[in-house]
Length: 156
Image (cartoon, rainbow, N blue to C red; front, side, top):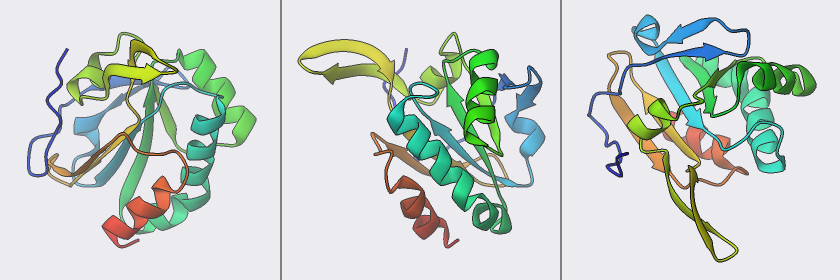
């Protein structure tokens, strides 16, 4: 595991993950376009639902600005499919059950909640340019209001 956070200008780690339908999604296949890659703890929890629905509701403006939105969590593809269907999500949700991509993006690490320390997903967003380089890396973000912050950063 790494605690080294990504920084603007650095190469975004490549990956291939299964989406909610069990299909492979690879970062390198999205070269030439921009990507908003957001990491969230668990499908169908209150904060993660708020965040996902905020991306859903703002998707057209993000896509108009040239961005593909991808959500990543340690949930199984089956659970992600249920999440997509339940909340009418219109972008790919990716399954990282072994945490390899979460770790590569420094979105997996030590957390504290109610006095307990444990390892888990650090709610984060990495914005990637057309060449596969990091434009912005945002860590420990809040579920509410985060999409508006992203829209402001990218001018969407």
